Length: 171
Image (tube, rainbow, N blue to C red; front, side, top):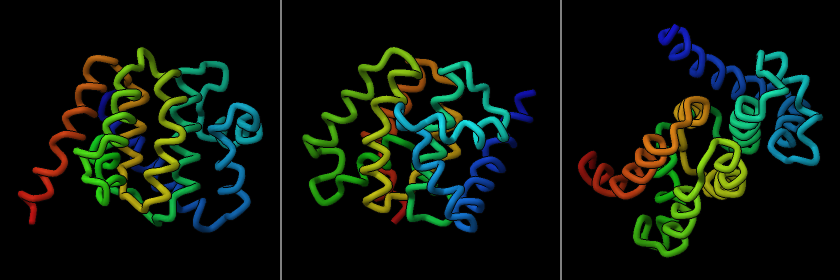
C-alpha cells in the first residue's frame, strides 16, 4: 500500500502538468480549485482523480496543489521542498534571512491542521509560482496528504533554514 502511494503522486502530478499544458480549459478550471468561492467548479476534475469531495482534509490539499500547478509557468515538476522554495522566492531579499520570508514561514509553522495550512499556503504558493521557483508539487502533495503537524512543519522549517547551505554545497 505504501508503494502504491509513492507511485501515485508522481504520475498524478505529471498528469496534471501534461493536461494543463495541452488543455487550457482544464487549466482555467483548476486555477479556481483553491478559491473557496469557486472551488465547486473544479469538483468534476477532482472527482475524476478519485479525490473525496466530502472530506475537506483530503479535498483541499489536492485542490491547492492542482491549482498551483495550473498557475505555474513550469512545464514539469520542480525539485525544491516548500521551505527551500519559500527561501528561494525571496533570494533577492536575502533568502532565508529575509524578514518577509521568515514571517511567512512563521505563519505556516503556526498551523495546527491540514485545512488551516492549505488556507495559509494559497497566497504563498501563488508568490512562489509567480517568481518561477521550481517547487516539487509531488512532495508538497505528499506532505499535505499525510500531514503531521510536528513532523511536516519541522521538515519545512529545516528545508527553509538549510536550503542555502545545500545550494552552496551543490555548486
